[in-house]
Image (cartoon, helix red, strand yellow):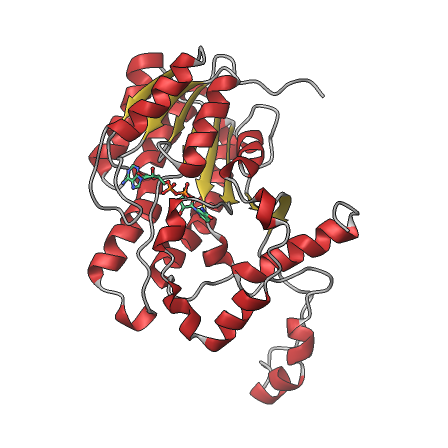
Length: 325
Ligand code: NAI
């Protein structure tokens, strides 16, 4: 397999001052992409701002001989999104890659979530995907090439207590990316979603309040974190993220999970189901009830009900594949 490189490519990574985004930016630059390192530089709950977060990463890239510029605009506003993309266009004249990654958490019970906990979360996850994504897509379309990676979350795909706001914002990435992938197929643009798992400063925002939900607390307590002990660093997500935005990867319209070194496609799938009797008469509720098992039967897929179940299925896969005893 030849090296996957990004020579001549211009990449934007949002939220690249810390955690996952930082590893994406460093590795893109190491593989010769020219990188816009965007970060507002606020806290893990989205308060405050500092240009330093992006500047430090740019310095690290330049010290290693790479090319990067810093940008401290917020992804959560229309003006910010335009300015981030314009920075790439002003400096290098195009955008080939967008990794939409910036974000933060504000956890609370569903019934207690305030507008200050809902609106900024929707803005930084869902609306930012439009604010940065639209001008980036236009630039890609003009050149007939693009790679877009949106950041979703297992919290949305599988459900996580105390994160209804976050899951709503992250879950929306699925629909958004599916449509961008379909429309982008006419212009050489791919679009996918990554569901990362990493130890980062976001953990500090994971208020343990969710443990008050008995079934969910059980999932957490029963989770098999044995692979995660040594494979929970952000760097474990970087290879998949970068492959998905490389020229070598033409896969589009997908959702991919990284969990403790297990990389897996995640999809919404329809079961074969049950077909109601021939004719124009709709089935009764009772017919639905008596065929409900067949309606629900999916076959061989695993279906995590929480992000913690996913740890367990990753370990199972590792054992089945002989990677871990
Ligand atoms: P992090 O807190 O280390 O990094 C996120 C970065 O985004 C920070 O540097 C922050 O300053 C920046 N940011 C926040 N609001 C911004 C805004 N308005 N404009 C520009 N930059 C902004 O967190 P981490 O863990 O690296 O998360 C990266 C992405 O991955 C987030 O979207 C997060 O929701 C998502 N994610 C992370 C998971 C994990 O296990 N760490 C799991 C699932 C999703």
